[in-house]
Image (cartoon, rainbow, N blue to C red; front, side, top):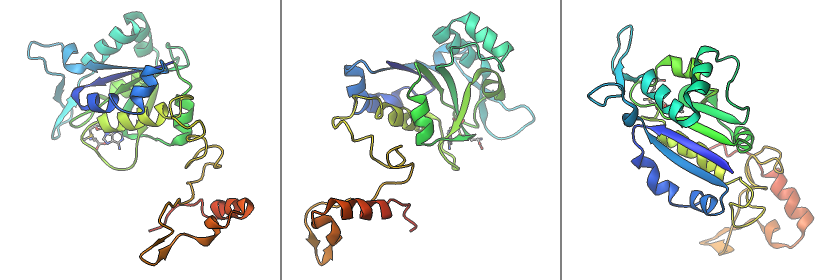
Length: 235
Ligand code: SAM
């Protein structure tokens, strides 16, 4: 069982996704749990705000450290988070627990990271908004800082969903077909390479034909063709 805690200013962005596959199946089978934490509920002022201006000057607002700290204390207990804050080098959480900050400055996410994270017991995802998150969160509270690529989105919600979905679908028992997640792009069985192209009926679409080798029933030749075509599309 893997538990995901999501800290966000916009919890409503998750609900539709989490009520559908693969999340729904994982919850039904008791393979994962998802809990949304509305950052606004951890505001430390009378206005309910969770952001402030950036030190040093600049456009836009930054998510403050205090509400995030308070949300983490609620999730893990104050003693654990206080320890983590004062000594971030020595992770106070168990090794199979992760606090992940989503940031374009983080380590680029890939299938290998998804496989590693899928072995965790608990993962907390902290979604940034506006200009981002106070740097002390990634420096002193996070165990991992993850980017989903060299581009900028408006918030960490889509990156969190991408990470959660990629982990959830490889939990044994989530996908309907047992081997579906075993042989696919970047899987260990596919030696980390992209998958080969796949085709279905009709065999001939307006003169554009399926590669003949896939129709000849010779599995050795089909395997060889698939191996040769397991490569990135350069287009
Ligand atoms: N000022 C930041 C910068 O230039 O790097 C961008 C902040 S972005 C508008 C707001 C939030 O969206 C970030 O704090 C992060 O949580 C999330 N975000 C945007 N792009 C992302 C990416 N490629 N990977 C992960 N998170 C991302």
